[in-house]
Image (tube, rainbow, N blue to C red):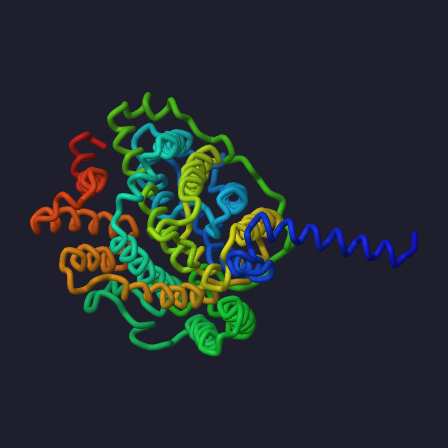
Length: 494
């Protein structure tokens, strides 16, 4: 056999493998390429990698018995980070390979706070009991998918309200990006509710890093440069590393508003990390029933489930709309698969001892950068798995460098607002309430819930009650209960 023949066979094999990937993920059919999918997956990972820092911090405190998640006599941050990356990586890969949808999964913010600050602080409740609540919620929400109820509720939402959810998410993502960068801050001293920068000025090096990244991103978008979001992130990260080594801004705090938000872009020690998976399997399904009773368990599981249930609805609509992955009825392709994997992710998060995993709206950053298939999610998932061992390298990307991508995505998601009939108040009132409450209440679930309630009420009093599907009535009632959970819990003594 000649050398030329061997080279030809290798080329044929490589081309066959490439065609296999292209065919399975329908890359060409969706107008994409392998390079765009890989780049989109990288952008999504960079945009949401902050969860590997925040989730350990949120879950680092002691439970009501004084014990720490992952064991030991002090916060076990490496173990929580490793578990967070492991579950996120596996479930994101499954989302990409089974549902062929460019959406990534990780421990949900808000849900982890509920576990760490509320559930495990109930007298007698341990971290294992708290994760048991998440497992129970995951089982219930999975059963809702298998019975078809979760998808039926999603399809019962009118198209204009889904559009409003996507637009509201755009504003929500923009606010997240601006607050992560520190360009918009809360005013704890009174006066205006929010502030621009530091006392109305761009008075810190990290803010300058964000502004440079944002300008580079917008310029690349305006010139239609491929990979605009990634270029902005890389540029801002490089500038951030230079700033850290020259100016040493420190970390942001109440008395040091000029520092980095999530951590300085610096590498300390070895870039390789030996993982600790001690959180895996740290859950108890029986414990919560023994400690707080059936009714309390139902209330807590319901509060987690409702937030998880509708957050995913908003996220997958936003991702589908941004990537032109919706059918003629406004439904994402493979909706049932997406919802099933999302539900199993909640279950996996509880079993992994790192809180409920859910879809991340930051997935829209990868889609905005060109991702159209599940290959992007597989890429993001693989990067999460690699981050288990190379977690120190993640710290080279500060929050201020990833924030421009979120703001840019917010811009892109606002274009759907023209699809709402603003002359019909039965549409515009619930749409408006949905759009404004997502950023103003800083909650996707609250925005959706307010929109549902106003849609049902306005339709009923406008003589259009028959147009409202039964599942929307049920969902609106459940949201009313959800918004009254605090007094309900007080009545139950929780």
